[in-house]
Image (cartoon, rainbow, N blue to C red; front, side, top):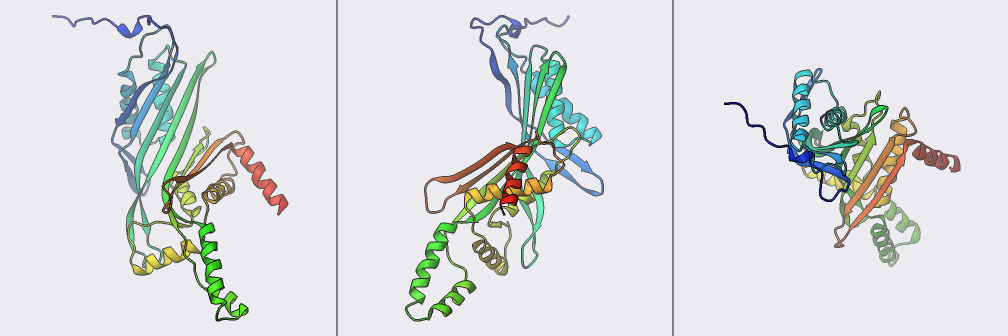
Length: 317
């Protein structure tokens, strides 16, 4: 008995002929192991979203082709162990556009927990720290072929200390000290001690477009994000470590806006080789401790625009 030939209803003309921007699958989970020379392999459990656009003359996409493209590429990565995460997404995009000949645009995004080792600041205790890494790729088909843009990113949790509240506490302390100390002694005391403020758990995020001949490591983005807040946070801290984290954070207070500007400055300094048209997204969300709302700041620009702003800053100073 031969195979039954089922009708392909996706290719029918829809009753309402409207072009759809994105159609596909979300939440596709896969296991990914990336081998590295002379270093431990990276084990990830990424979640993929994969979309193509749908022309107005076609009722539906061939949905199974999207997870199929993801599986095909991941199996090749396991065998070859050569692709960066953003290049992996770019290859899936390429497969989608080949599988969906009617599509003019395809998009793939990937998110995964990422484990790295970190030492506590005083006792040097090692602990496994979890953060998130992301990769995106968007492909466009025109008469000249397929053009793909790809991005790599990271999201990291850190700690921020509010400068405004800290200045208020400092001024209150000055007034109290002036009741029984002379002004010179008060200033010496104020210079020697840390002042209380309310804290926030900050979430910093960077996404950078990766040109075809360039490599950007997610580990470097993690470091830039951590260094741009008042203090990193740690899974394991003993008492001397806790003291160091709290004191250092309060000596380095940051608004949400400061964190974004710090990240921008470090990106411009560390990636001078990236082309001017490279797209950069930097975002910070601070989860407030004394408010019900959160604080948000973001910068989206090209590397050329960021370089211009930083150069203007340097010229003024």
